[in-house]
Image (cartoon, rainbow, N blue to C red):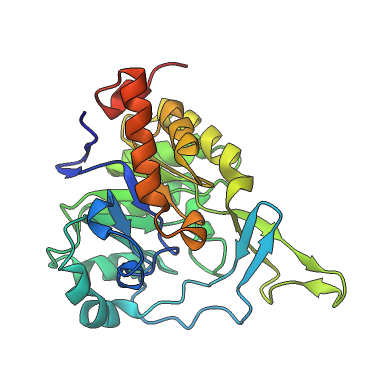
Length: 300
């Protein structure tokens, strides 16, 4: 059984990774799960300079998930290189750095500063965060800007470049095709869906930012539909995420066209979800007679 996934000139050992923003920089989860079994760690986003993030509270539960408005709080590139890379170097699983910014130059500068690090397997470019005033969605909803940004970053690195797409657009396939045209090696979809919770007793939004990113089981059908449509629109691998809570959810994504997966909100409930999902995928493959991940594809 071959669970490996090739992106550009590198290989992920298995399809199940952990989503950016839900797993810190890996060290936080080391006492809780076996990191060596992960297909990849997609790190918490890193910007050029440190960011304090949005005012508290930043999280609120919903009936089928949660809304967050973290605001890309992170240690910045200097802090990442000094404080996070030493631990990440010790890991056997691929480390994919999530890159964020407010301007095109910001994304480029992050990659310029860190690309020499062998511990970084590749990049996931966050052009889809709904929780910052500038950048994020400002890039991810415009195909012209997506292609230009991807092309700019493509020239800065030989490592795999994954563009993370937002579902908060009219046609996600147009954005995916723009990323592919710019030189992306894969696309990840979806990021969170814009949502809002109102505290009826205080008569105001439950989080100071007002709106935030909805994740968890509520968005799984949105994510699967996006993967299905995008996988038919591009010729590069599609990484699926959004509401994967168990192996059955993961198999749905794979059958819809995903080549790899990310576990997000479920990490907050069970830090070992990724291991259990991988075991469930293997069981499904044995029972279905599948020998490789591509055997999932092409049924519809």
